[in-house]
Image (cartoon, rainbow over all chains, first blue to last red):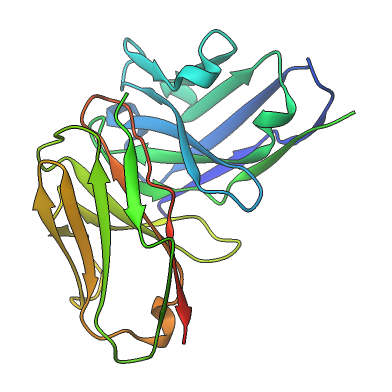
Length: 118
Length: 107
């Protein structure tokens, strides 16, 4: 089955760190751009970061530059998002998505909730 | 950065109605635009890409048009399963800015 499954969300204190993972299956992960998108409670979608197939190109929304790092391990069919210096504004459901050649998102996971609170 | 503005924010319609949602980009994005449908508690679903191409498996009552800075998503005959929130997304420059969303409600 073609799917993406996120994990690693949870409650973290302001200023803390968290690492999200996304396990891919049913398609050739190593030939796919990948993306993280987030959605704050009762808010719209916000693109967070893209990564090219081999990890050589990465793009971020301005609000996470310098704090978040997207990475991948093609041998493990896995995508990651390292999140540092977290603030309340980072509270959201984080979705992993397959990205068609750096363009649109044609396969989504179910999401993992990150809550930043003391 | 490219900004995307959708209108209206909320739309009330009845089953069988034709519905149109507009998305405007702050600068030209050619045809690099996608539309997604999201239902409460669920992940978004791709409907349209490259402004007017229908994703496989999406009903033909959905259609997209436009280029440059102005785009529309149309639903020819609204069905009960179509009540949801719709988002446009530009992908002109390896970023992926979304519009703020349009909620389609039952009238």
